[in-house]
Amino acid sequence: MIPWTHIEIGQIRINELRHAADQHRMQKALRAAVLHDPAYCRALAWVGHRLVAWGARLERRYSHVQPAAVVTMPPVAQKWDCC
Image (tube, rainbow, N blue to C red):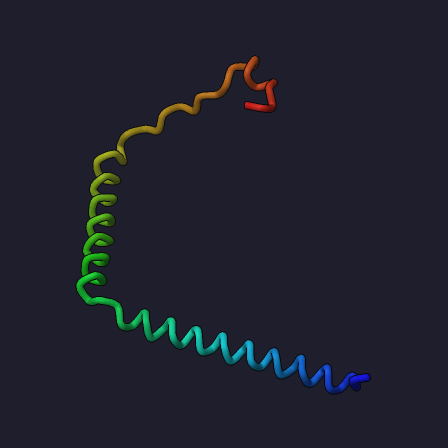
C-alpha cells in the first residue's frame, strides 16, 4: 500500500506542474499580443475613434428629443405567462 504522504506529495507536484503550464500559457499569450500587426491595431483604433465621434454626434443631434412613452401590453395579454 502506498503511504498517504506519497499521494500528497504527488498531488502537490501535479498542482505545481499545472501552475507552471498556466504561467507558460499566459506568457505565450502576452508575447503573441505584443506582436500584433501594427496596421491592424491602427485600423481598430481608427474604428474606435470613429464610433465614439459618431456616438457623440448622435447624442448632440437627438439629446433634445423626448423618449417615447412606454407601451404596455393590454390586460388580456398580460395574464398569459407564456408570451
